[in-house]
Length: 318
Image (cartoon, rainbow, N blue to C red):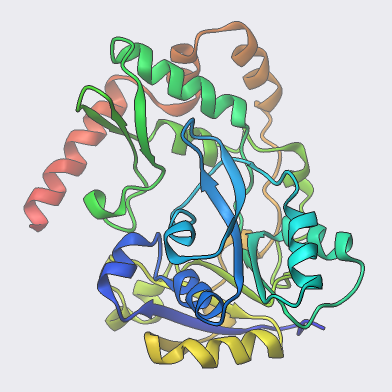
């Protein structure tokens, strides 16, 4: 049974290489390392070679490392729930990570409690359309003279810092392009699934044993803890989650914080369906992606000017 009010921590992994490879503070790596060291199985979301999001089963660190990083698109589960059940029934320890609705779905599928199951869910802004993501990639390839995208980073923390949400695409001709276009579409909320506007997990209570997120606002809550390299917000939802955190604390720098100081918008209520959502999808079906990027994502002269100012700001800080 999950508590009505979770315990809240700010967390950073002590290993700077792990934190650099993670999108926030590295808490997922710490928790999943614990599972793998004890011979368990980790389930989580990865990007495939064609940059679709799918859940996979990991038995080792190399497979688990593919799960690091943000993916702002819907993950295909396939037979994941069946495979989790099979592992649990054979006595294996399982860590399942995903959105709150995926964790809740898994528990409904299993129909009973398993002491060898540990669930980690994320503070989810919403799940965006894979179709929009695919069209965005093809448009970027077309702009780059048909060269193929070979690598994607939804949030390029290493180049732009933890706070500046910039997606970077690498192409097979050696060029890379960074932009805010998909980010702007995502945070404009027009490309979210309809169910996201009525999500029951846009609240403090979550179905996971531990809920994790970026700790936005840490510079106000604990400025000495912030270095723009990433801090995890960790919500401990029950005794199982509390025991797990205690087992990995030696690998972490951590600080107790207050729930009221950690209240991000997705912890309060679902985002409202935008008034222009219907028009967006009419335009998406009938217009070019460049038209979509200009109308809904700020693509063009104005965004280019902002990009120049950000670059100047980073140079000045350096």
